Amino acid sequence: MTKEGPMCLATVYIEENGEMREVMREVAWIRFERDGVWLGQFMGKEEHLPLRLKSVDLLNSSVLLTPATEGEKDLLDPSV
Image 1 (tube, rainbow, N blue to C red):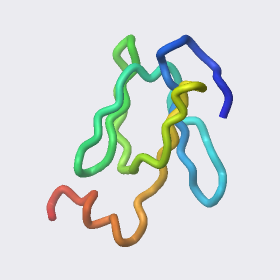
Image 2 (cartoon, one colour; image 1 turned 120 degrees about the vertical axis):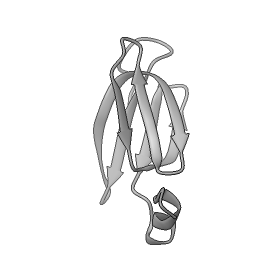
Image 3 (cartoon, rainbow, N blue to C red; image 1 turned 180 degrees about the horizontal axis):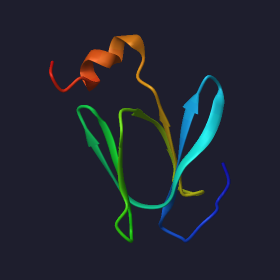
């Protein structure tokens, strides 16, 4: 992951099956909830993803999310 974008805003990636793909650029905030994460851009776009945090690279303004493991899936289910 390399720095690509305005300072203080992050690029969020998902890691699945050993591959990374970009989900959203210019993310201004991230909110963690029981059923996943909410991502929000400075200009208003928001997206909910049923994923968990893997790592944050503050130097390169990047966040890496990953699917929940089998043991964690119940934790992400809001009905439980």
